[in-house]
Structure formats: structure tokens, C-alpha cells
Length: 279
Ligand code: ATR
Image (cartoon, rainbow, N blue to C red; front, side, top):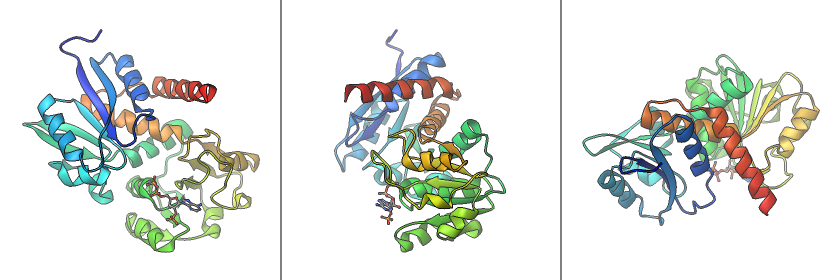
């Protein structure tokens, strides 16, 4: 029941109507018995600061931030967590009292949670490869290094951005190619290749049993890369887990309560299936 005491959380973005976050978050709130509702606000490019002012004025309990506002919110909040500082981007804002707002980046930690909880894979001491050097790839590179990976090798079409991304991993970061993919214990596709298509980001012949192959693309859930990896005996992890766990971390930051990630995942899968059936 929504009452005068019900709190509001939201996502801002442009475009944002397609976001799965309202389904994930309302499931999280309901399963944890939290008196909160979550919705999406279309915020025009350049208007993120007004959205932060509205958050303060209205007492909004939590805000997620997606494209194109992640850098502007990074520049405008009052405090930042270490991942947001490293990445120059914020995906989650939490009120910390006296009208002050703290910006977080939960994407990379959400990916590592998915590795641990959905694939039973701890990256500590492991040899890892990240394909791609965009925002999502950088978050994962940063988080793998924070989680203690022994090597984080970035493989990207454009080598200059590969070097920039690899720097986030400090002394365990480097730039490589297919030889490093073949030698890795974990291979993560963090490019957009395979989203809605059967394209592969790399030659799948280098993949083999004994590796975990993860994709951040979740449309389709089993991408061409994951299908090829499975057929070669590798373990696989789909991209929905990162979305679920970054959201679960946001709920924990806002409320102190760790939500039921399995219920969130089930709701997201049902929503994706309903969308596929409707299209
Ligand atoms: P996001 O911020 O969502 O992670 P992005 O910044 O657009 O997305 O990054 C997309 C990533 O996918 C980049 O690493 C990009 O490679 P480049 O740095 O060379 O542009 C990679 N990518 C996109 N399309 C690609 C393609 N067709 N082949 C190889 N890599 C591709």
C-alpha cells in the first residue's frame, strides 16, 4: 500500500523508458518489505543538476543514473566513493544527511558479485581478460583489480583506449590480444558486440574448457559468444547478473538492507520474456 510515508527512489536517463531498473527495484523493495517505490524519469541532457536539486528538495531516498548523466552527476555530488573517483562516473546517488549527496559506482562491484554468487568464481589471484574499453569495461577492470585479480588484460579494437582502461588496474593491468584470451581463467565481453545480433567480439576458437566466459550483453541472454564458449566446454555467465547485483548494491546503500537477488533476477527474466513475446 502506498501511503504518505512511502519513500521514492528513481533512475534518471535519456532515454530511460526501456530501463529494467523499475522492475528490479520494485521487486527488491517488495521482497525486503521496504516502504519504497521506484520509477524512471526522463531527464534531458544537461539537466542532471536540476534532478539532484529535486532529489534534495523532495527527499528522494535513492537515485540511479544512466546515460547521458553519469559524468555530470560525478561532477556535482558532494562526496564520491573510490570506484566513482577512479571511473569519473556515478551510477547511484545516496543521500547522506543535511542535503548532501554521495555518488557511487556499483557497476564493477555488481559484476564481481555476479561472478561470486552466480558463477561461484572468486577473481582473487586469477588471470582475467576484459574485452572492450568503454564505460562498462572500465568499471569491470577497476573492480577485478580491487577484488585481487592477479592479471587484468584489456583487449580492445582501439589500442589507445585499451591502455587507458588497463591503467585502472594499476600494476596488474596490461594490454593484450588473443594469446592472453586463450591463457585466461576468466574472459569478460564488455563490448557491445552481440547485442541483438549473432556477432562475436573475438575468434571463439581460442576459448576452451576450464575457462569462465562472461558477457555483459543480456539481449539475448545467451549471446553468440556464450553459445560458442559452451560448445567448447567453457563455463558461462550471462549479463543479467551484473545488472541485478549492481541494483542490489544500490538498494543496500540506500536502505542498509540486502535485497533478494534471486527474486530480482526472476522478475527481470519474466519482464524480458514478456517484452520478447510482445515484439
Ligand atoms: P559502454 O560505455 O556502454 O561500455 P562504449 O563506451 O560505447 O560503451 O564502449 C563500447 C566498447 O565496445 C568499446 O570498447 C568499443 O571498442 P572501441 O574502443 O574500439 O570503439 C567496443 N566495440 C563496439 N563495437 C565494436 C565492434 N564492432 N568491434 C569491436 N569492438 C567494438
